[in-house]
Length: 129
Image: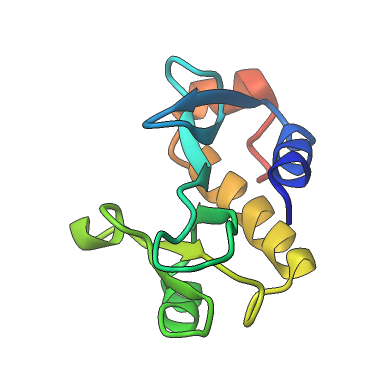
C-alpha cells in the first residue's frame, strides 16, 4: 500500500480526519482533530531496510495483536505497544496483504470510535460501529 492509497482509504471511513504530525507521520483520527481518537498512523519506514516501505500502525483487538505481533513483516507498534496498548505496525505485506490491511484499518477505526463518548458517537452517527 502506498502512502496515497493509505490516505485515500482512511479518508473514506466515516468522520475520519487527517493531520501530519510526529515527524511527518500521516495520522488519522475518528471524531475530529481536536477530540478525536487516533486509529491509524502511516510513515516511519523501517530504517534497517534498503526498501523505503511505508510503515502503517493500527489499533487492534487483543486476539489480532497476539496473532500479528510475531508475524513476518509486522511487529508491536513502537512506543504504543510498550505502554500496554494493542497496536501493530505493518512494515511489509509478507503476512498482511493490502486487502487485509484495509480490513484492519476499518476495525481500528471502529475500535477508536468506541473510545469517543456516547454523546459524541450519537452526534456522528457512529453508535453502530
